[in-house]
Amino acid sequence: MAQTGSKWVGVHPVIVRICHWLNVIAIVLMVMSGWRIYNASPIWQFRFPADATIGGWLGGAIQWHFAGMWLLVANGLLYLLYNIFSGRLRRKFFPIRPREVVHDMSEALHGKLSHADPTHYNAVQKLAYVGVMLLIAGVIVSGLAIWKPVQLQFITELLGGYEASRRVHFVCMALIVAFVALHVVMVALVPKTLIAIITGRARVAQTVAQTVAKAEAA
Amino acid sequence: MKSLFAKKVTAQADARLIGEVAKRLDAPARRQFLRHSISLGSLAMLTGCGTESDEALDKMLTGISRFNDRVQWALFNPDKLAQTYPDSMIQQPFPFNAYYEKEEVRHVDGAKWKLEISGLVADKHAWTLPELAALPQVAHTTRHICVEGWSAIGRWGGVPFKTFLERIGADMTAKYIGFKCADDYFTSIDMPTALHPQTLIALSFADQTLPAEFGYPMKIRMPTKLGYKNPKHVMAMWVTNTNPGGYWEDQGYNWFGGS
Image 1 (tube, each protein chain N blue to C red):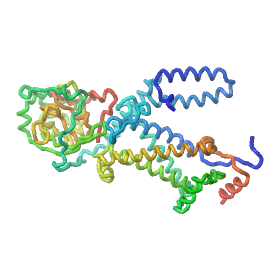
Image 2: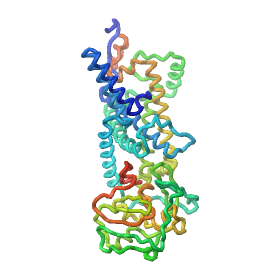
Image 3: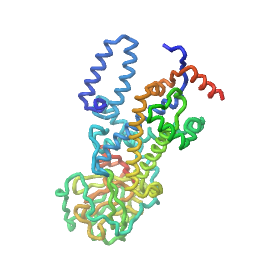
Image 4: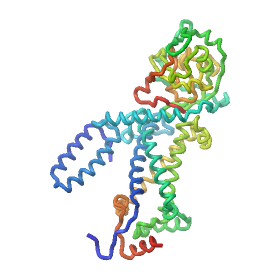
């Protein structure tokens, strides 16, 4: 199958792929059960369609939400600890230079951004991925503030009180959903990224493969 | 996308269809196809939309909810006070909420009302309103948080529950206290929460006699627990080591329900 002049390179370590797909399950569970909980007492003048929710009723949705939270938190910690201690976090996501973000964003909008080397994130990707990590941290912290406004009241107070924490929780959710939508669109545009997050590998041009090998050796 | 989250019928039809297609494929392709459908099936399961594995799912979710009870019990700090607010922040009118409509609120005759006591206590005599009113009284302006998400600040006054438990000689090493209400509601709490300084036998709301819709003649008020754990129109209570459950808790709400 392999075309001449192309080669498979490793993109995502297995632990990153496992964490990614567990996170997909956790986020889907949390968002869809969260929408059902929101519907019980909407903050704004709208409700989510019942068909887009999990749990069947408020009690069921809460059961899912407070089961899914353990998966979200445990998996998030595993991902974070691996990435910090392996040096992958620093290597893959930093530095994020504003000038590069602007440049890469403009390239992307003009359809000129190169995806030749999937082992390397462009500045917009770095910003988006670090951003969604922070959003997930934010949704967890604001979730704790809503769940434990007495026992963990320092968190609730930090976010401006119980009612403010609910809104922070909602806004983090909304931004995570926006990230997911954009993320899925980008995957549809560059399908080899989907292969890479499943198999861990991507086929690249011979020249890119050499660069990657050189970088790994260094 | 939508079919994934559809109802029982669709899920079963999908399962049949998957089986049919799998039969027609050759062996390696079939293995691969089934591998994919397993993940599809588990995703459908996660939606909790009435597949045959509903019972197993229910069991798992209930098990996690019991685990969450233990986590909350461990997290509960008996000295940690809920935030109090200035009386100017009391919400008026305060929202009514129950498992029935406001028109169906029970009107208990306070003159005839007696709080029945049973279980692991020394003194089981039933308490009248004047007897409760003669005990030391306190009032706190705190936030009531509903499981639905909304919250409202109110002021509840009455007898510290700990004082009352001491008075009746309750076994403080027991684990639970159960409550039965005039509106057929019932619930139960853990002993550490019962002994919390802000847990009250509430006889007043906003410094007025407790109105019927908020639980006349008496409700248990705990700012450390969600609304459904705060029983209204309490008729009987008992101290026990067997978890008495609750109206909503038995249907799936988390039992501890702590804030």
